[in-house]
Amino acid sequence: MPKKVYIRTFGCQMNEHDSERLRDMFVQRGYALTERVEDADVIIFNTCSVRKHAEDRVYGKVGGMKVLKKNRPQLIIGIVGCMAEAQKYEIFKRLPHVDFLCGPADLDKVPDIIDKIRNGAGHIVYIESYKSKRIPEFSKDRNAGHAGFVKIMEGCDNFCSYCIVPYVRGRERSRPSKEILEEVELLIKKGAKNITLLGQNVNSYGKGLKEEIDFVELLRKIDRLIHRDCFARHRNNGGLAMTKIRVSFLTSHPKDASLKLFKAMRDLKSVSKILHLPLQSGSDKILKRMNRKYTVAKYKKLIESFRKIVENGSVTSDIIVGFPGETEKDFNDTLDIVKGLQFDGAYIFKYSPRPGTKAFKFKDDVTLEEKERRHSILLNLQKESKTRSCAQFTVLKTWS
Ligand code: SAH
Ligand code: SF4
Ligand code: F3S
Image (tube, rainbow, N blue to C red; front, side):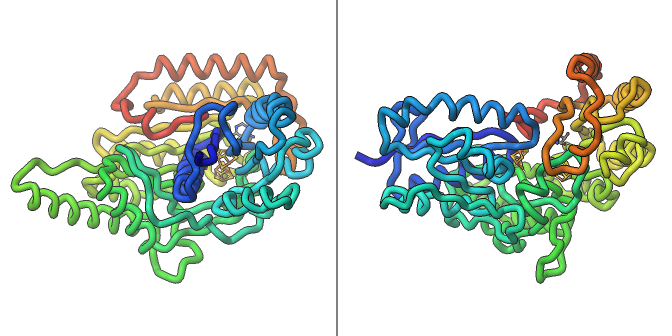
């Protein structure tokens, strides 16, 4: 009987993708996948630390597995991903039945870690992703469905004052374009129709690579590849209609989004016309304290240019309410810009102080009740927002 592995994911698309690659790796090693913890020989939680709530859920779920482990001591439980980094000094104290921790940069080592534990190695920890320069090297072969993620870069150098990501994913590093193109080609061959390029900050793709390339050039190369491929299929299928392949990307930062990018979104046929551009706040004072490096006026201008250049384009956003020092006036400024810009979709988050970040030192002076009030006002406003062509939004971005 093959050993069974259960993998549960929290957090963003990057984490969903990491779990998908981890599953492929286990299957290649002869494991079977299971959806039931009761049947599993190995239980893995791929975790997120972006808000405290995400960590609390994992503490709750894994805490409840004590009995499972007591009844089956050979069961192996691991916490991997961002929270393994952020909570490295807490997890074993609070969850002594966890066998291993592994940060996001070393996920490709997880099956080997499990073999070592089976051979009596005891607790194992790989928790130096915050300073790692590597991107996990999963096997080149991939399982693909209709939609496929491709990681183009990992990590973040922006250090928004509220955000844990640079401390858990480490500094920005990009994958060589050749590797990315090979992966895109493989996914297309396997039938993927929607390709999503992933990075914490896709606009700075290329930084530190030996080749001279930026994000727009990468999009161009991928577009050329898709047209070549579609063309070949068109020919082989003896005149059947060309299949549409769509390339989306996540996430852009307003300080780096450029007219050059918008023009590429207009001109490149395979590139999706959805721009996810997190605003975070409609108050310059708060944006400054968030270390976002743009003003509300600049953001507005960007969206106006985008809408002018990309006909039928959609814009989606992320907004945080209740950041330290956010007054009623600052919040009203956010309402105004949300009313004015009419996003096609937006995620609204209540500020959650993250230990180790700069904002953690600021007084968390907006009460939970007030955060909840602002959250629901903004959510309702966003719901009322006239919906433009946002049907693809949920496909583009989901949170678990
Ligand atoms: N650039 C990243 C953003 C990851 S975090 C990307 O690849 O998508 C996603 C969103 O979570 C952010 O845009 C921000 O709105 C929100 N967020 C980050 N840290 C937060 C915190 N401490 N409290 C509440 N929301 C937060
Ligand atoms: Fe976090 Fe800011 Fe980097 Fe996004 S750009 S991952 S919000 S630090
Ligand atoms: Fe969460 Fe890590 Fe993604 S902290 S948002 S899973 S990069």
